[in-house]
Image (cartoon, rainbow, N blue to C red; front, top):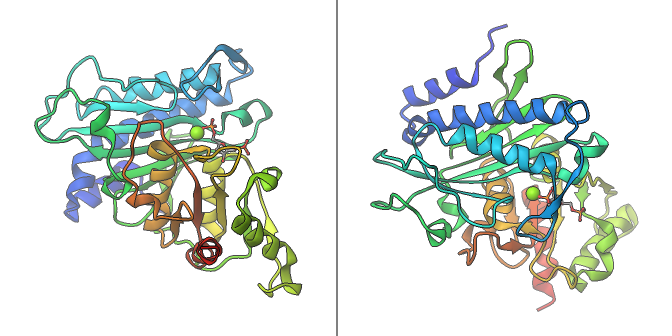
Amino acid sequence: MHKLSLSQFLLEASQKKEPVTTELSPLLMDIAQACKEIALSISRGALQGTMGSLNAQNVQGETQKQLDVICNDIFIDNTSRCGLVAGMVSEELADIYLPSQPSTATNKYLLLFDPLDGSSNVNVNISVGTIFSVLRCPADISQPQSHDFLQAGKHQLCAGYALYGTSTIFVLSTGHGVNGFTLDTETGEFYLTHPDMQIPADTQEFAINMSNYRFWSAPMQEYINECLQGETGSRHKDFSMRWVASMVAEIHRILYRGGIFMYPADSKATHGKLRLLYEANPMSFIVKQAGGASSTSFQDILDIMPTSIHQRIGVVMGSKNEVIKAVSYQNLSH
Ligand code: AHM
Ligand code: MG
């Protein structure tokens, strides 16, 4: 069986005259390399003595794990080299990061990432991931500042994630659909295994942290109540529920077989839990490219004009018709 490697895939995209993919290819190969190294580091966690927490908190006030910091360093090391990145935003860094060698490329990019999403799962051997987003660096800016990163998600040039699960899968969109590549641990190459991923428009599976029920808005409670009533309720169909507490695993499952993923803003987390620039936006870009939808319940996530680099947001995303349905409860309440 002929297998198409990630580098061959990017070359073919260049031949099809996809300018963004062509320009970003060196950076995408560096990101893929970072993800391979992160996969290795995570898999060796207990053996290399890196499973613990640090006596430190990140800018979100969350306790950092040793692996959060290690994965952040791996990601920065690998992506600073190609000379295309003018600046970075990471979940693990309070401020923006500028590579020590300023980019001299004509077209420069901004890289935003969560190096180890779902890291509370890492000690218990459950899937975690890396999420990334690429924006254009404004013209004539070689040393970007925080405000240069505050661009609506619809302006992303590229987004992707790596899922470290039973195998390592790298999923990518440069605005021409969504493709998934599996790491062959024998050759060290990613190969195309999930071409043109499409999210089914309808679903009978939802993902939400039910323990937050009492904090949700009345429309969100009502939506979930009706899912739980199943065949006997107004939805006339039974639903199943999943919650991995690892957004990358959740979204990957939805890309594969449909579903709706929700982490709404509520009375406990009034701005939501997930971060707009390096969690909600890249995942929304991928979900939309795969035919799905994403919303805060009030607004399309990709239309939001960010106000700060670590901004949080409520999230409802996945199968298009189910997202429309979930958001409609909110609208009915007005
Ligand atoms: P993190 O970036 O600190 O790992 O937090 C994000 C994660 C998501 O992957 C997941 O959807 C969510 O937090 C789980 O939250 P909870 O533990 O409240 O269920
Ligand atoms: Mg995260």
